[in-house]
Length: 418
Ligand SMILES: [Zn+2]
Image (cartoon, rainbow, N blue to C red):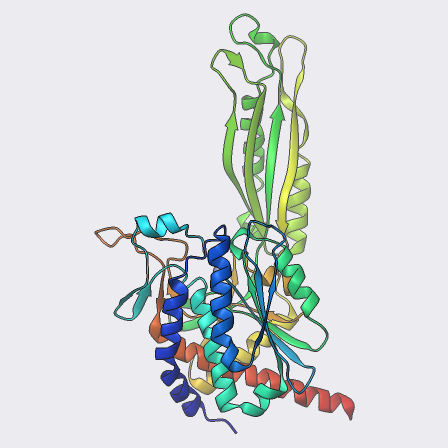
């Protein structure tokens, strides 16, 4: 009923217009804090998808310093919906792009530039897939309600976009497909089926200041206590359970002739499963309370305060995601592309939605060096790029897998009606 060759041929012809749109997207700086730039990219993106029949809605961010989230919808004949998720923002301030001359730069099969890979290339992948579905499988395309959602501030792990997605999903949402970068292992394309959860934390130690010459024995040294506490935190890392703690920053003290009364450290921890994550959080919080460092004079103890600053929940392996991944593997067989899965340490918007709707991630194109804008003369440092030749096979794979998802759901609902 469908012809893999014609899907691939159709997609090849879509690459020149797709790259032209991508070039214009990359030309709009959309650093998370560049509110105007993010909004400009949102409007441009809405224009790109308008010819496919999508209507636009801008949803303000919870943080007024950030741009609007973008929601594009195309109602289908049925209630059944499929969500596609991407983001508008990048990690590159405009000054940094200018300083490093980091801009749209094709070079052989690569195109360097801010967001070419993370994630404007992913947005272009969505565009290609929807074009292919409309041309090659018009009945399925018209039947489904398509919901496309762009986070304005994914790179800051803002939670309000996850809440927005959850409000738009219901029991007829077949899947949420996240267009973050593809993984690779040799020739295998890796879909993302799990991501670590992450919590950021702050430890504040309050000691007792004292004259470092005259009353040294009266002081309770906050820095010495913090040094002990960060050792305790670092020791919570357990690679056998894929749990990592990172002490990211430390500061403390004021002048050299004072026993310091305050010291602060901040960091994060990450884990794949809710169990490991929960135990890690408990162990971290248990380090709060009176410290071991006390003043020699009267045993005045340093006080250790441990706070969780922000949390993104883990996205563990789960049957719903695995079912989607299996469809991508079957579609890969049809196309002669080998497809496998990976569990990734970094986070995405998938962390906020996997538990309400079957979610699969890593559907974007292949490239590398995300979050890097620098290029060194000897080539040992290269900036972010996307590989042009990765678009067509991946778009064909996504297209055929989505058709499997739609057909299987129809078969399933027919069977359950009988
Ligand atoms: Zn991203």
